[in-house]
Image (cartoon, rainbow, N blue to C red; front, top):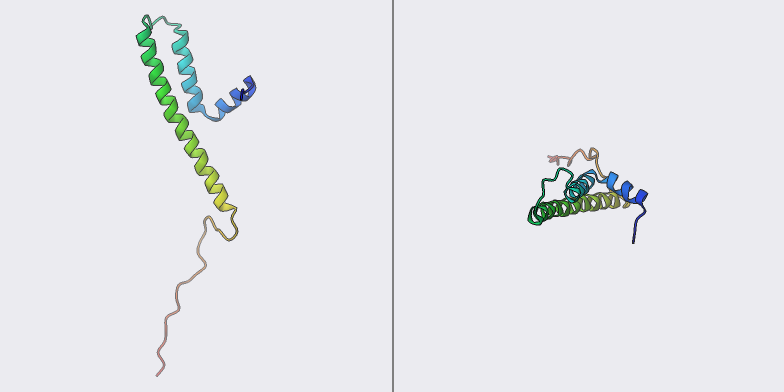
Length: 97
């Protein structure tokens, strides 16, 4: 599956942490400041960026799954998400003489 440029940008905008990570990787690749003279230095930076992107991607996925699960529970019949309980407790028993 391939996304159009617009769809890709839309997805990245929904996940700013991933967009930031992609930008960081592109800056390493471009090396506009000329700081990365050796392949080893570029490799280490890219590996670190990929590791962080993997962690952030998994976190974004988990958050999305939690939201879906919470939405699914809220749609079940008879389920209340929040609110004060209507019960006043149990009625005390009174002994008769």
